[in-house]
Amino acid sequence: GEKVTIKATAFDASAQGTITFVGALIGEQTRMAKARVVLSNPQGAWRPGLFVNVEVTSSEADVPVTVAGDAIQTVGDKPVVFLKVNGGFIAQPVQLGRSDGKRVEVVQGLKAGAPYASAGSFVVKSELGKASAEHTH
Image 1: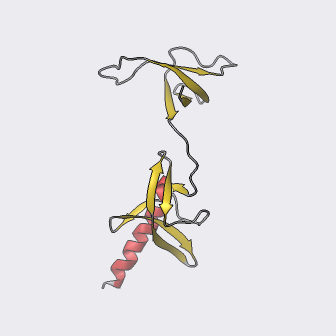
Image 2: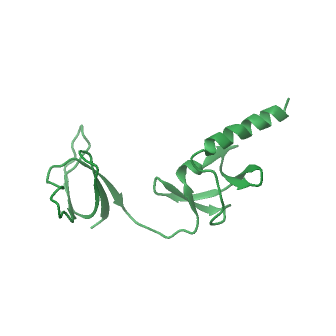
Image 3: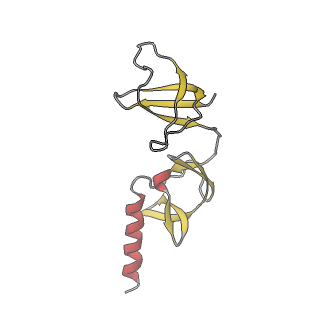
């Protein structure tokens, strides 16, 4: 009864569905099992035996603050998010919660809607490292 998102490997399409059966046997080398998913198929594109990738949504929860996973960096063995401030960025320590593989819950250290560096946060971190190295000379 779990909800899933199915993505075809042979063509560019995805669909939502519900798992109705999962086989008990798992292939020793492939680590795959047979499963059946019920989904809407008005054009007949989804056929039995079609190879697909499936994302299972085990549970959903509303969380007040999340950030993109690539926004999380580590400074001094602690997770940080780089907040945008006048003239640049500052490393804001954060306490992390759950993740869905794409977004990460921030339980402490960040307010909802605060602007932060996401995809380029590693560049911000490296610039921060350069700046601190220059100041130690």
